Amino acid sequence: MGGLSHKPHHRVLYLSHGAGPMPLLGDDGHREMVDNLKTIAAKISKPSAIILISAHWEAAVPTITQAPNPPLLYDYYGFPKQAYEIQYPAPGKPDLAHKVSSVLSDKGIKSILDDNRGFDHGLFVPLKIMYPEANVPCIQVSLVKGLDPKTHIQMGAALASLEDDNLLVIGSGFSFHNMNAFFAPRTAEMDRMNADFRHWLDDTCANPNLEETERTRLLVDWEKAPAARFCHPREEHLLPLHVCYGVANRACSAFFNLEIIGKKASTYLW
Image (tube, rainbow, N blue to C red; front, side, top):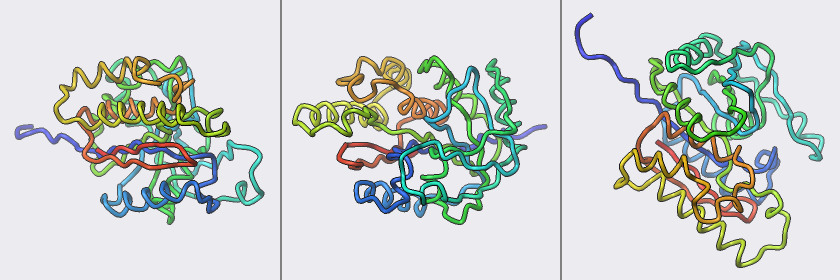
């Protein structure tokens, strides 16, 4: 066939999803986050489908939900009864799951299709805020055990070749995720470290003057950033960002600085 090939342009969003179900329970510490997600949903066109990479799922190889109607996983504990009664009956999209598996395979990345796993709170909490009608088909993709940043950028690069129009790829994590710090008395030193890392991350994701090879290098070597291991003692909440960057391969078009339960966090939109 002649003519120019169509290069799909997917919307990409890395979001900080807050603490468990609290954003859906009216918690004051999540008000900025809830308002921000509503603003973003109003700003972008409604997607035909969502591919969401959640911090709350790790597997030996990228694993993809393919059930037509996945259940919800209430993968949190110690919350009030209503936290376990939340409903979000978004349909799955088995044909998209197969396409994701295929584009990963094209890049030499083995994957597994999963018939049974439901949607975890990394999906249903932010999406209930953004698309409360639950009428956008969704699939979830796992992180890869070992949490290698380069692997996750490569996963995103594979997803970028999906031909479907108007997809929204979401990395659902938290740009600050030191659980002890959320419960410790707040100190000026902790606030400084939180701010230093956020400033580094904002600049890395948003600076239009960075070459993409340099942006990639910074994200791969994220542990060298100021206060990196204070903000992420374990990096599962950061690596959905690497998948997002792999899809976009450019500076984000907008970023949002939020305070979530007393900590500085960011959301990035491409």
